[in-house]
Length: 357
Image: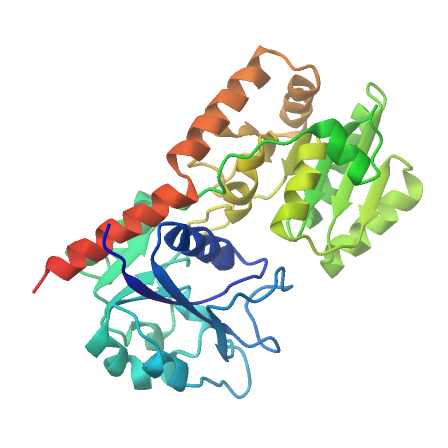
């Protein structure tokens, strides 16, 4: 395999969906033996709510978000670094006009690829100032609206990557995390946990039938506010205020019986980066049916209402045939869309772009 040099601009080591995507494919490229340079946000102005990891040697913090006043971008790293392919992630969040001033210089040395995270065409005219060699989106829903703004031969569908399948031991992780070994644990975390609070009345009904613990781990203020009130009145609810890196997140997933995701549809196209992040743990995901999870098929157990949610949770708790089928589908989906496989699809795209005159 021929080594390629890749520069990627966007979020990294944060809890944003764009960061999860970038990290999964970026680390896949590194594993495949390619050279990666990541240009990312300044620590005082980044995309996401928390920084979740330590900076790697190939990471350069050199620009603010588009929301910063004033916006900043240090051109030197972009101009001095060596790369044959330049991948932009979620360009709406970067200082576009500042990037635009050096983009012709980037184009002189690299093929350019824009990975679209927006669920609709951007209303910002400055978004369209770049002459990308390729536009990458996750599925046909995205391609449908992108065709209105870009030539079809520039649009490529490459699925969102999954964290690789890596199951763990429930008993060992419960001991490590100081969690009871004899309870059924429903886990919620991060920003999406705020929506889980709306499902609490149904969860409370399950506490009458099972030895239950609802475990919420988050630092998101609206979620903390809601779950603190619930925990004060319900002793089977435990709230932990903590930022989770990937290893810690997977320890919690291993320790839990299921992960609950109660996020309703958006009016635009949407995808759950959280699902791609967690499914590789083998922990079943029970989710509200919405456009966040509609592309996962039977790899996720979905519900339409509280009655359906309770039925799904019971299916997992009882370890029935439906649950066993779910885990098989979940593992197959993760293996077909692993970070390394999606990273390879990008390499195939790079080769295709290189072959064009």
